[in-house]
Image (cartoon, rainbow, N blue to C red; front, side, top):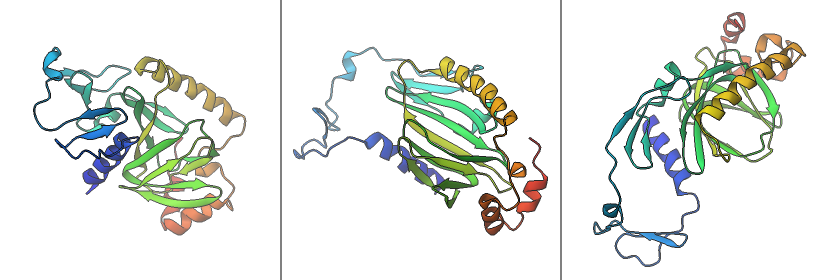
Length: 238
């Protein structure tokens, strides 16, 4: 079921902007001004050089992936990327997955006990929960998210996340790709973020439940949804 939900998530993203064809011939789909056919007689690809399937090894800035064909990349299991790439920050462990023509995908691993207050982002995102449980917060309202949950936030809409459960959470994030963005610039940005968040924490910003006042609304909600929250609170090591 998790795999089915993830497939649906990715299909919805890829389908954005597509309009159904009215011709109904050759199983074609009208995508703007381009029509492609599934009839089996399309010779467009035959005129291009065929790229051999390749296994691209992980580096210090990118995960291992399969180059199946020209402009077709595959990560068989995104959870494996946790072992090879990523940077731990006070907002979670972030790591790049794939950079497409206009879209990028990355992961966030929320450690138990993490807290991130509501804040806006300049561009919208769609976020899929691959595993674990966590709490989404927006406008002071909270929603428990778990494996299979999907949410969208619009540009400049404040959202925050909280991890009051013992298992933490692993999230897949899809956003529009910025001009010139790739593995190297993305990882540099993450390393810069570490220093920025360290400075913010030193200045009094809160990133963990044990830094909040006992009567904070996030702690009240955490105790409502997790009877064992105090164990999480005691186990925070960051």
